[in-house]
Length: 230
Image (cartoon, rainbow, N blue to C red):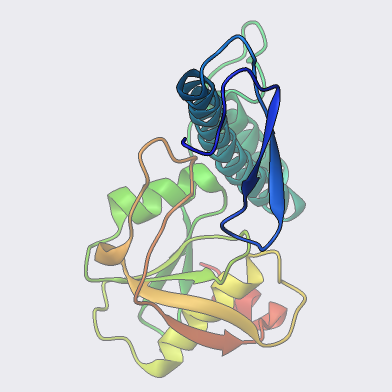
């Protein structure tokens, strides 16, 4: 503060981040110390504003991700599944329930029979089913699959804690097929134990976080998927 004289409307100071000078506008009615306090308060307000906006941006990103997952589910849904997705959107507050509209009974995740002829693989067909499958039905040691970084179904190999590579591939193909990458080749699919999944507080249906996964690459085969349906 020793560089700032009294009764000045501006002052030129060294910029510690560059070799240039920086001009600071001052209030002549205030002392140098009072001017410094004034700028510090402005800085604190801006810092809080940035923190608030950063939170809003993250919240908006999560909402976009959620709606993209709903869009993917709708694009692959039959009439019954569309009704259930509507119920999901009502529960999450995106649409209102019509007068006298009944609460839809939730269907269970779909069952698929792995190519070993004995292992059951479950597939969530919307975010409510995904939540139920992952956090209520699946055992902690069972393997969970999801297309990497894109919207898609939660897939769990049930009742087989040591599945063969063939069965893991079956589950990965289901996760790829019931995702936004359905028509793609060599889709990356994450595989991880259910116990390593986390549901963030306040997270949207179907939203999970995890680390320590293995990633498989598979190309979904529609004919194979249909033949596995139980």
